[in-house]
Length: 430
Ligand SMILES: *Cc1c(COP(=O)(O)O)cnc(C)c1O
Image 1 (tube, protein in one colour):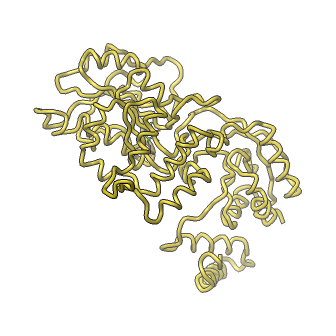
Image 2: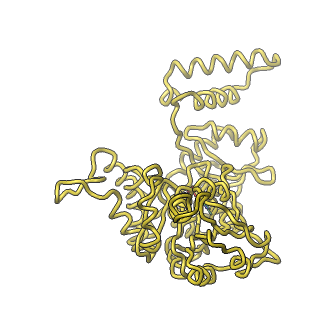
Image 3: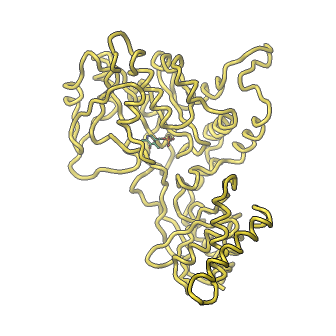
């Protein structure tokens, strides 16, 4: 704590914690609780900065923990771009160049698209796509209130943090038209809802939940057929952003959605794509043209450091997918996870290696349990108190509690982090 926040601040926080403990019942102050309280207080101070944590939660794309951990090659590219770089400069010509042109060409190449755009995140990608294709004023004459965007009721998803698809459509200056019931929508529902003001058929991937039972929805191929007939465009929000088929990962890909006939597809850069926060838009050049001209693009554009990290991550997808940490974590065999858990058990000298349920997280592969392994501990003071102490360790360790036991899940842990986890655990076990 002294190294991170400075001695003065740490002493002040400890004095405050002690004073509070003395005011409480006359019992002996609990040293661990005072340290944990001081750590929490210091971490909450203005300018304390982001704190690196160890993810022992078993959730690979934990949105609260920053989603995808970046590949080394992405970090190198981000560091190189952090100073001066040729962001918008044509080096051979010595004049102004196009920002992100090479990155966009790579996105288009990987997705099998004519053209691509990159923006700040997945929500920005949907916002720009709808504003550009159906927004008020830009979608064509006579659309004062904006063009209509038809969406199935079962796809009116809350993305997270309170942001919902209907609000994103409204913010883009378009009008939402809901069709179908929660569980059932048919092509005839879309067809019946089309008016002279309709511009877009929107397909939203149910990325953070699954509907099971009596359900029916309309695939991109069928929507594309209807869109061709009616002179409309199909926009598909895929959310999790798998670019091309990946063994063992059952999520729709940009490539498949475009091949099925979507005009524009959007996804996040920091979910299954495994890059920095970003949004990808790929599709037909003609459909992307109004997005490229839209004033929102300037407001939603990606910064140079993220741009560099995303491009490096995508190069890995092309040349060495195994080097993308998220994909590598998803591909870990049980033997690897079990060996890691056993190594930690030996280092800690207590606990048991157990089967555990991990998740992709980040709104990807909902409901699919990823078989993992964990070191299970039953600390004397209870699992809750132990988890709190682990979060106060340096670096903090975010574990999981299940059935009253503390689980250190191996799915999102690196072998290189075991020593630090063991140290934090020894502190609470002793
Ligand atoms: C995650 C997600 C988004 C939002 O992407 P962000 O990058 O978090 O802005 C939008 N739509 C779907 C279906 C998602 O899963």
